Length: 231
Length: 288
Image (tube, rainbow over all chains, first blue to last red; front, side, top):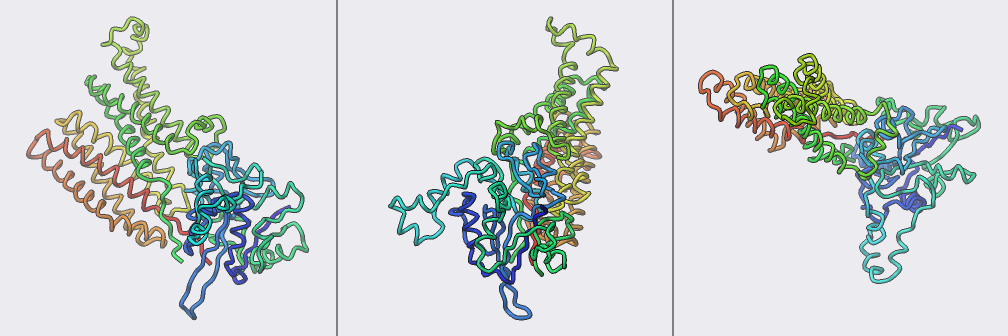
């Protein structure tokens, strides 16, 4: 299988269901995130995020831009990782071996797409106690309900772990469970996020790539990622 | 959407680490030259500094890691395509070779019975020359490495430039000569080395900023950030003053204080320029 991830920004309504689903799946630091339109996974410390772009010309409009790791095939983060903690699967998915990651952050520097971030010691504990919505904090801060806002990750070797760098895995652990669909794709109500197989000639998602309707961002960097955007 | 994001991953601690490496790298050259001239004390100080400062650099780097206790994986599971691996090897070699050079240089005057067996090696000029040359090569590599590491990254246009290794090299020469301006303030050759390296460092740095202003939006933003920084303006002024004062001192005044003050300014300049280089590095993340 050759996985391909296609994003159609015109369909995205920024409901953030993808961000929530990813946080629930991986136990990332959603409760520490701030609602920031000008952000990337790196700056939000989330595996995926939806930024928005506002333009005045030719008419005022706002475009939402779902962001995640591009899973580059010419992989800058893998090349610089001094301990080989970052590696590519046979399908081309870029993953991090959390045990081997020493947290030097060289991969964060090398990633041209802002897909990686550090998870420091104590961050998960802090996330359990922090709210990103004032009204929720006021209502639940004195009750036991507050801990329900943070859910531990689905157990897998690529789940968010403290003292390591974190990034999107395209929910690779789901491949081993059978049906491989990333959690963000599964919950997207408008099908702005699509997942397909380039080896399948009848796959409509792969057809978007083959027909040239979906293109890579920053092709000048020649990193050849698995993530395409409908333009 | 503002898609230019400035680096906050590598900050003042990495700037300090790289400054230590710059000072250590070319101290080796001055230590070897001092040894050749029979200035044993100066040779030992330079080689000892070249051995100790990279140790501090490694400590800083280790503290920067999320898992300092697992840093041994760098050598157990090495990635040959990562500059960090070669940096680790370079720094370790510099520490070992400089320590050996300092030890063998000082050995004849130590009169320690246990070490007396090694004494013939200290008197062998072939051995000491070979050790000295290897120490200098390790120093030059470490100096260049801090530039190569950054210039290799395509994601940060301000760093992805052939100017970076040159800047790192001049930082190394300026660092070594700044240190020796303290040790040998009356030596005109040290003053000339400091003067020329500091002038070249500032000139290449300014040229890099000017070229970056004409480059991609991210490189432009980086150069604008550096040029607009008060710290940069003060440092630039101080380094120009240091260069002019050193030139005047070489030809007219001949006082010991000017090289010492210029050496201090040289060290500050290296740290500040490196810090600004790191903090102004910006990604240009993709937008639709």
